[in-house]
Image 1 (cartoon, one colour):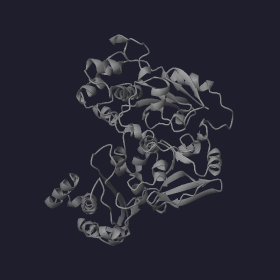
Image 2 (cartoon, rainbow, N blue to C red):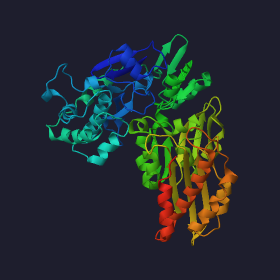
Image 3 (tube, rainbow, N blue to C red):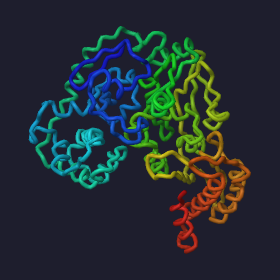
Image 4 (tube, rainbow, N blue to C red):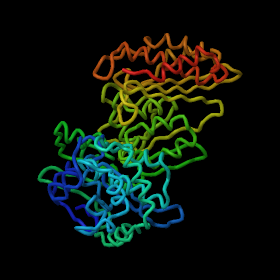
Length: 499
């Protein structure tokens, strides 16, 4: 059985399809149709809900934090012990007057931020999360960031941005969700060591709370599908009609949800959502900030994780090239113990990895940054935001006395797996830190990669854009050469590379 709070109502579910999403459950089982299905892939935000979860700070103080998530990607089982707030729960009154509306809703009305209204419930929820987490108006850029996963094609964004600011001009609405959630959490009845679950005849969903429970379940269900945030897995369920017999969710396994900073060496739990570690990651590697910000939307980053991305083994997963270039390692956990491998050695072939039947990814370790490290991260896609990579290049070098002493170059979208580029790396080592060295290394792209042509780009385009990106990295690394007009023209052209 799983238990969660829906708006102000405690919910218990046991007999249910393990692959049912929160969105489908809300609309078909509860008649709450305010959350809309626009794309069922996490791209439009029409299904956005708030998900509250209890957090404990280092001083042991308990509090509730609310974040936006796509209910079309959130499996019902993952809602256990959480507080799900839908658009129906924003204003309690059934027929409210304008003044009774929540400030976010009132502002959207008064600023004419809705026409067809299909996307409006999701926009309300994204603005509500912003309102709850920011007691004063956080500025236009923060609003744009919060709305990054919400499409609006009727009014455009100007009246919505205006509404976000105007909501703060009304008397502040007190947030009563935490009190409701705290009361609910105290009432949860779960026997010690019992694993929350859902079942439907022969199909089962398990939600292990500890690593011991997790490895025991995986040993007993070798063919089980593993899931964390479900940002890709849920698409398989809705688009490809996948019906797994057994699903094991790692989204609440305590040991896999930790972030440890050992004086610059980061240990990131495989199930920890991006939004909970990216800030610390970018503190040491600020060059990765844009790559992470372009990895889906806020809603997706609130659910997705490094372990989920690596386990998915997609050749266009954005984190893998970054982790390979940084020489990161990963822990693979089973009932037999833990083994540690380099992320670069994890991928074997298209969607195939070294992960054994009884193993799970438990932790990713990012090494300390050396003082001489230079890092570049570049993603080329058809859309700048909310799009998968056509080509992703990450290059890390170390240098001494203006000579490159070490190079690690990794790419996505250029092969059946994310992989490093040994010929480019070998070519760079020993060369002077100059633009000419990177242009010379670019001549070896064909020695490392033979990409395919697909709907995103031709093989020729991928080769050419990779050569251009290496040229760009050389210009970025060699600041003294940025004044050269030819280099300025080159970096401008590369920045506007398009399909």
